[in-house]
Image 1 (cartoon, rainbow, N blue to C red):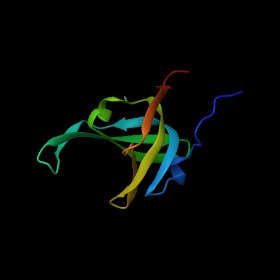
Image 2 (cartoon, rainbow, N blue to C red; image 1 turned 135 degrees about the horizontal axis):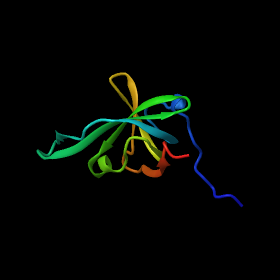
Image 3 (cartoon, helix red, strand yellow; image 1 turned 90 degrees about the horizontal axis):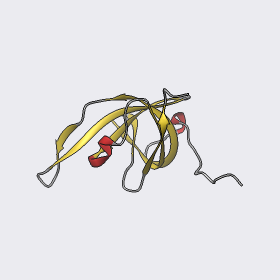
Image 4 (tube, rainbow, N blue to C red; image 1 turned 135 degrees about the vertical axis):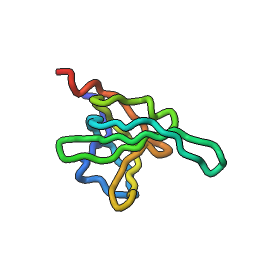
Length: 108
């Protein structure tokens, strides 16, 4: 029997304030930067673009997540959180999400 997988969502179907499971390719990756936190410390953050056959969405990586992906990586995000930032949807792992690398988008 085939392995059970969580249901997948396409980027065009994503809506803010919902969790989603989707697959895509990291097509753009900005430099890591540090931002101030409420407690006076700093936290790493990195913006990326995630693309599937239906479109693209901003991907935000926090803390140790910033080193998880490289440009061209195919990834599956499980129970990722979709939010609204300045009128546009973006996705992050949130508190409970998981990220799986599926390989490089450049390999056959």
